[in-house]
Image (cartoon, rainbow, N blue to C red):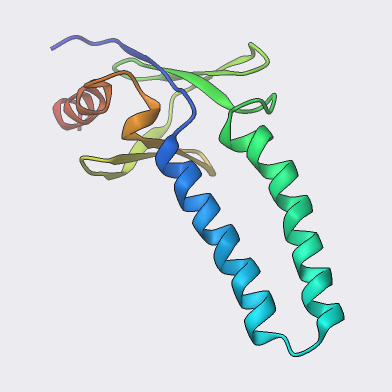
Length: 134
C-alpha cells in the first residue's frame, strides 16, 4: 500500500442537487406557511441573495478558501486551497466514510468529499488509505 495519496477535488453534482432541493424547500415553505405576503416576499428575496452568493462561491469552488486538492501522507495531511495556499496538518481523522461520501475532520473543520467530486475510483482509494492506516 502506498504511503502517499493525492486527489484533486472538483465541484459535486450531488451537492448541487442537495443544495437546490433545500433551496426549493425553503421557497416552498416561505410561500406555504407564511400567511403574510410581505414576509413571504422578504424571505424569498433573502433566499435568492443566498443562492446567488452560495452557488458560485462554495458549490463551484470559486471561493478563495475552497479546498481543491488533498494530499494524504502517513502522518500528515496537506490541503491546497483555491488561492494556491497550502496548509499541512498533523492531526486529522476520518469522521465518516461510505461508498458515496467521506468526511475528514481537520482540527475544528470538516472536509466533506462526495464521490462525484473526485476522479473515478479516488473515493475508494481514500477509503482504502484510511482503512489501512487506522
